[in-house]
Each structure stands twice: as C-alpha cells, then as structure tokens.
Length: 203
Image 1 (tube, rainbow, N blue to C red):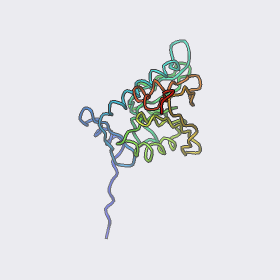
Image 2 (cartoon, helix red, strand yellow):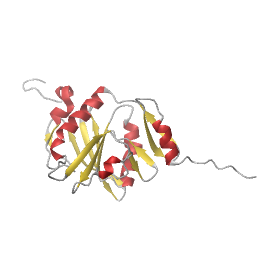
Image 3 (tube, rainbow, N blue to C red):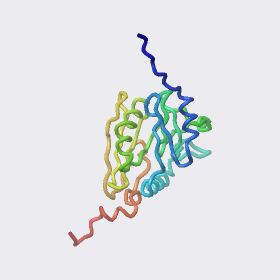
Image 4 (cartoon, rainbow, N blue to C red):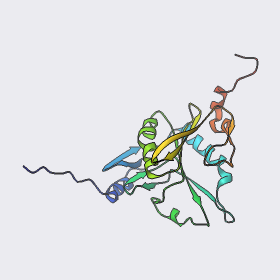
C-alpha cells in the first residue's frame, strides 16, 4: 500500500502566510514547514532594547567611515528556509556596501544578533534560536535578560554557540564584538538597577 508523503510548504508559501498575519503578530520559520507566531514584546523588553541601541550608537556607520548598522526586529532569512525576527540585529558595513538592506527579508547573514529574554520567549531563544544562529554562521549572539539583569555573549565555533562572556550587575563593560564601546549596565537596566546596587552602611 502506498503511503502518502505530506508536502512541506516552500519558504515562499510560508512567508506569504506570515505577511498576512494580523498587525502586531510576528511570524518566524524556525523549522521546516512550520510558522511560529508571537505578539509584541513587553515594556521592560522594549525599553532595554531601545537603551542598548542608543548605547551602541557610536559604532554605527556614516558617510565618512565604515561601521555597523543596528536594526530593530528586522526579518532575516537564514539557511535558505528559515526566517527569524531578532530583537536587534547588526551588520558590519564596509565601503558603503549596504544595498543588501533594501531587501526584505534580509538575505545576508548578520554579524551580531541580540535577543531580549522574557518568561515567554526564553526557552525558544535558548533552545531553538541560539543553535540556529550558530548553524547559520552568525559570529556573535547576545542574550539579554532585562529582569534578571545579565548579558550572555555567545560566539559561533564550528557551528555551535559557545559562551565567551557574561556581564551582570551595574558595572561598565566591553563585550565582543564591540570592544570600542563601553556599556554602562546601570543605564541598560534602568529602574531595576536599584535592586543590584549596594547602599553603603546598609545590609
């Protein structure tokens, strides 16, 4: 007896379905034939992303020098059949070669990705997306938890994500791939920094 083989929808079919999603709903393709949907991120999630984007401002390119382009929630196509929408994504720009940014989704592999963790997204970001980014060749991925106040830095090595740095608390730090920028974690956490600060003379 012949067994019917279920056809896996092509990327273009799935992407058309994502484009038809209601406003405020984001779609990703993390495995063959399946769309993952999610709503808009929460307030602390959005605020931390905006703060980090501002703090990385000095590395961004301009008309006179090479640098980075940092984009928010940009659709990126990886490995031909995957679609991701990272919270922040960074591309190195050399010689003004930024024409690839006119595409949607962007087909060039990012040089850096940052995901803001939350109770509803942490498992997907760690278990599904982090290994996918490494397989796709993304050199650096940050996982930032604005509630627990930490940054984890992962580097791609032989297609696997390897943790190379962790930053916590309210110190000023320099993290790859941005050694030229000192990040003031106190500013990144906002009001939550008060939970980490030690007041002299008090226990």
